[in-house]
Length: 321
Ligand code: GDP
Image 1 (spheres, helix red, strand yellow):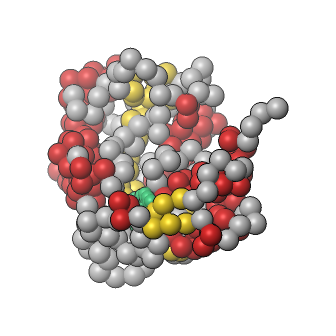
Image 2 (cartoon, helix red, strand yellow):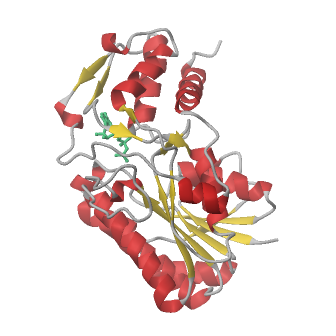
């Protein structure tokens, strides 16, 4: 039975990846940070089948010990400070987790499990102010936030440890991926949660920032399968993962409100608080290398994704009899 070690197991991607790995017969070990409360809502249905161990991306010793103790075949580094907006108010912390955290996990692997395979959760935010469209593995990076800058560091340190030390280390450049488990601060979930509240009479409007920015949004459940496939190849390599389609935040609002028969123009207000100091205007992936080499294609369309999220929020918020 292979062992997978997952940082960020309590997050959206960690929970879907844990489900996938369990279904494939893995022993799944998840790293959690010590806390007096247990924010395990996304993995509550899995806690009996996975092992949780305590370590911290800011603490080298704890990471090296955990890697040594659990002897992983695969390490998935999904933990980060992952919200772009927060990276302007906490830029140093974002760099500690999202940039240097990657080096710490790689150091732990180099010392304690050098034969393991390493996946780094890289991000389309690295493309930022895009220099070509669609974006592919060879597109130069131009990050537009402290988060994007930190992810560029994480990408290159992964490539560097592969080239310097011969580690099997890959960087998966994933475009935005969403689900009913997405954090409420991200625009997709903020909108679908608001649609459900407005439909149920619990709210009247939702306040958003820039409605014109465009993203390539896919379903997180599809994307964790791409992560796994990247670690099953003969040689480590980097891949762009996305749908190849782009929609605006306005399109998202239109589609989400239409799911419940409402017109977004009656309920969406713009609020300067949600505009960003520097914006990423357009992201759209060229995922053809992943299709060719990994046999990966996305299964869930944008419309299906939005409907899935609206229905899950309606179900969660509907008053119980
Ligand atoms: P990101 O691509 O990782 O930054 O994912 P987000 O879901 O946080 O943001 C996607 C896009 O939606 C960005 O261009 C934001 O500027 C835009 N957006 C517009 N209004 C909002 C809002 O109220 N919250 C968030 N999170 N994003 C918003």
